Length: 298
Ligand SMILES: [Zn+2]
Image 1: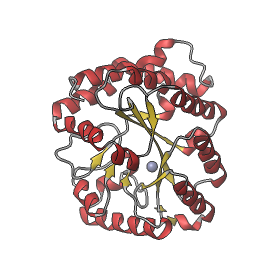
Image 2: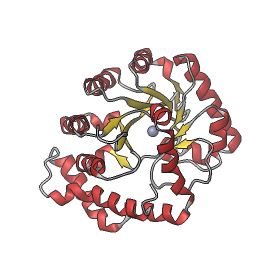
Image 3: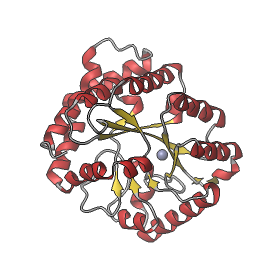
């Protein structure tokens, strides 16, 4: 590895492991990640719409095995109600986090260290409550919220597996002269990797990670243990509301909107056979715009 640190920290986030999960599909998916020695962070929903995870013993055992294989188990809401951790009163958020952590402790011998809000929806009052319940990391998704001295680490996702050309992005980020590693969270759901086209895409991305120098695949808990300074620096620029706005604008810019839709169309309809190279590069262009808007502060 050139230099003293990796360039990109890739964190895969598979949300929605719950009583309704299919053990056969989940176990095939975990095997794929294990084959490439890539850890995944698994978002566990303890009581999806009231169905307790331990009613599905095969999934419970699969998650125990995943934990001992080095994957991270995180709390992904309690019931996964729509925008659960954005709309409920604070006292109810506290109660749900507390119950979720108790169930994680009972089932897996330890509470979760990372919290992923359902629908990536949350509000700033949640941060101190998470700290009180023993969480050290929050991972949400776009649009990014401004952060003023968060009491825990925040490592948000901007790239969703199914809709984004990740291969050129990973290669581009790994080639940048960044002073610190850049965390790249890729989130997906198991049901998005069901068809052969999507399975092959996932395999292709895992292959790219294995082949690209200076790229390290990790989990949230390992990332904050091994690279706490990096994650802190990546959070600091979000104190600046204007900069957060510019970053969000870069991702929502209509210049990329059509390319995003076309990319999605081609991956859905044509098994990933994308005819135009610019459709592969729009995410790189967004990152170029977003990174330049942070003015080299990262
Ligand atoms: Zn979810």
